[in-house]
Image 1 (cartoon, rainbow, N blue to C red):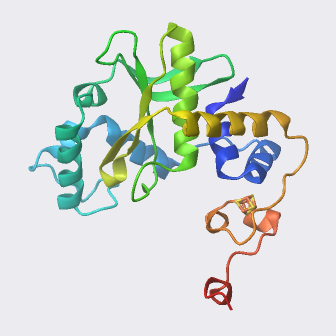
Image 2: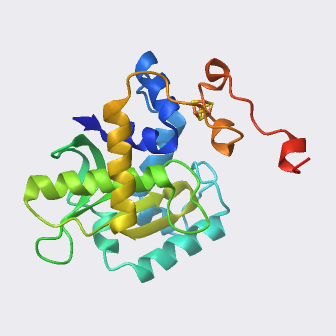
Length: 221
Ligand code: SF4
């Protein structure tokens, strides 16, 4: 049985998962935990009278509220995202287990779903691959537990006021299965990523020995 977090890490970099297992590093940094709590306080944070200066919000208050207001307008599931049926729920599926930050009963019968809350910055469109893999893992585990369909999920980037709905289509499910195979079959350090932006924020950069891109390589010289 693989952990959701291990699958997300495998999707980011298989070698990072190797180091994480070797050092048994599982703790969520306090700053990340604080950012995630924003996802449980949207209505309070949307109140224009609320001072956001002490909150771990990474955009201006105007941007933050405009984005959340747009999500509130756009998403039928908003009331459930604000007040989910389950919070920080441990789910156990056929292949993976872990915490779903929110469990939603869903607006259609037999279609409960999950929301994964990221402490990071969202991409311009869609969601990052590790977040997608984690969301698929959690949605499939919930569907397994409830004998229901896993059709879609949500990924939230609350420090940026961004909430995105994703469909669990062929490509996302294939990426999930690939991460599962990587996590299951690892028996030694996988190859390093070469000249990849993912290495710059990696905690294992020194141990890994990967060179990050120089200005010269970025300019293609
Ligand atoms: S430094 Fe790069 S290649 Fe090495 S573990 Fe981290 S992300 Fe992977």
